[in-house]
Structures are given as structure tokens and as C-alpha cells.
Image (cartoon, rainbow, N blue to C red; front, top):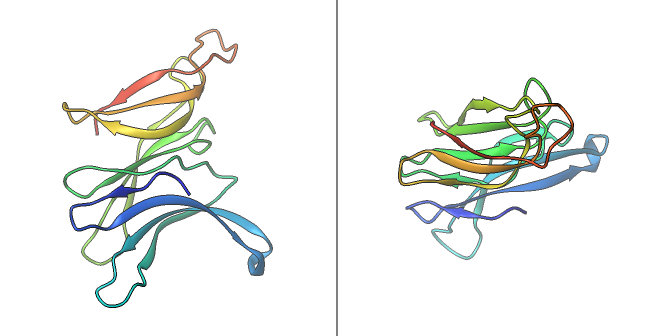
Length: 148
């Protein structure tokens, strides 16, 4: 389980690995929401996004004041070098997924890691574990910012 974030209503959001043996041992990563109990002690769990682990490596969720969730997907995206995702709640229930940025694996970085931060300027800040070398030699990562 990744680091949890709390919204203004007391709901918790996070990421976790999920193995489903009944589904041919396919492993997933899931972004989830935990809603506090109204009676008793049982929290209600809702999956917001579920993707095969081979798709990416979710890094933790951060929320803005409007209730949108942001996270890094370590291996996803068009180039397989990771992406930054925004999840927006909808009135009908399912969340909308928007890719804000896809890393190319070069000078812009690869494999976003750890949880993102939202700065006072409302930009998203984060790090990557790879890339950062414009010569294509791998690099040791970058610090980045994105305006959602």
C-alpha cells in the first residue's frame, strides 16, 4: 500500500498491489478510496482505477482542493517511461482519467517516483528515478513540475 491522502470529508485515497488468483494470477495495481463508516467499524472501499502491473507502477495519490487526484504511473504511457495521471470524480460515479504528461525517457526523465506534491502555485512537482540524460545514456532522474 502506498502513502494515503485524506480529503476534506475524511475519505482516504491510496494505491495498492492486487493479486487475483481466480483471474489467472493477473497482478494489478489499484487506486482506491476508503469511506469512513456511518455505522459500525467497517470502511467502504471503492476502486477508482485498476490496471495490470505490467502497465505501470502507481506511486501514491495526492489530492487538490477540488477533489481531483494525481499520481505517477512508473512504466505507463506511450513510450513506456511513465506518465502523470489526473483522476477527476464525476457525478455518475466513475472517475475520469486524464494523462497530463507522458515521459519520453530522455532529458525529461523516466519512471516517476514517490508521491507528487502540489505547490503554492498549484503546479505538480515530482521526481523521476531514471532519464535526465539528453545523450540517452540512462541518467539518474530529474525533478519536474507540471501545470495541470
